[in-house]
Amino acid sequence: MSGVKGENSIKLFGDDFDMLTSLANKFQQVMTTVPGVADVGVFKVGGQPSLTIQIDRTKASRYGILSNDVNAAIQRRLAGRRCPR
Image (tube, rainbow, N blue to C red; front, side):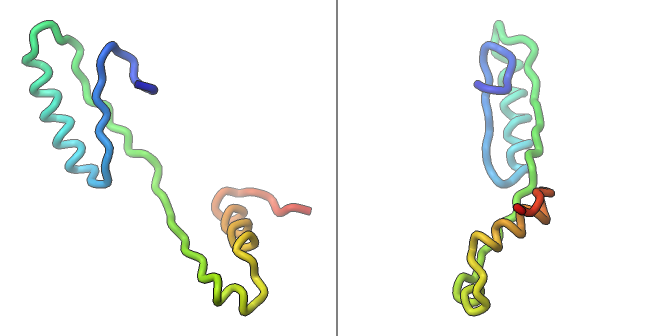
């Protein structure tokens, strides 16, 4: 698996970080009892927060604003992109 050094690995995905942590710890407990398995570890990756923005295209169009303009403004504000000249 990408991002993991080792011969075997398990990756857990989901929205509930506490549940994933609990499952990972259970996997670790079980794996340490398997003969021949060594160096069992849990690597916690919190990921990046995400933001979902829904553009109300009807309201935007009333003001002559295109969804691309809204996207560009959001990217400039959140990602630090410069305005095109």
